[in-house]
Image 1 (cartoon, rainbow, N blue to C red):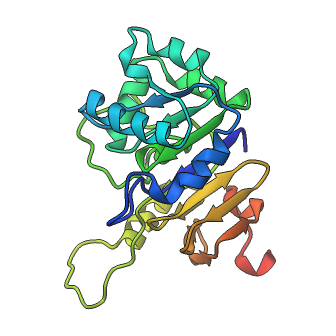
Image 2 (image 1 turned 30 degrees about the horizontal axis):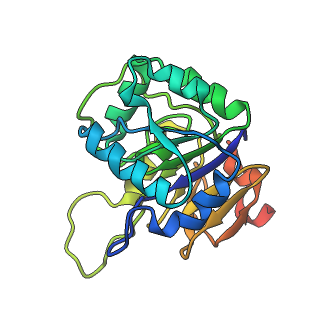
Amino acid sequence: MTGRLILASNSSNPGGEYLGHLEEAIRHHFSDSTTVAFVPYALADLDGYSATAEGRFESLGVSLESVHRHPEPARVLAAADGVFVGGGNTFRLLDRLIRLGLVEPIRDLVAGGAPYMGTSAGSNVACPTIGTTNDMPIVQPPSFDGLGLVPFQINPHYVERDPDTPHGGETRRQRLAEFHEENDIAVVGLREGSWLDVGASTVLRGPHPAVLFRRGFESMAIEPGEIPDHLLRKNAPPSGML
């Protein structure tokens, strides 16, 4: 694991305000940051999205500056001491990160100890690949490789199928099983209102358990609290060997 990260499933809970469930986490996470760079490229309305995020961070006592307002966004990242990558469409977000030359500046920022926060698509791109996003490929990025800030995958907005609701397509579990037919990376299914606090260890925070999926093993529920590091690596041992 490298850096200090908050990787959240969502930015707003139903009926709640934007980033409301993450208020205290944001204050603590960016307490030593003077300027936090905002990466808004997951949505099309860059000005509107940035205004919302900047206003919310300001209300929490944190200065946020959107990289899209500058002709050379990489310079904003180079001068920042924190970064927030917002949610939206993961394919569009990664496409813009690659084409604007922002992948290495974000990696360098985090490797230098600056805090990273992602919500939804911003959490997806922090992983080795964006292969466990729920989004439609509305654009085709040059690569599906993510930032690789953590060695595991995240599936945000994770839900189980309601047995009382007719559904003829694949469940989320089936789609993640398909991912593991081709890949050997652990996947954390994050429910709404939950996030991973990553530093020296990885801690699940929020009110709900997560679900851990590993190739060749049964899925397992993860209660809020520290997640044993070996479970998040490739070829993790069975749950009975914790």
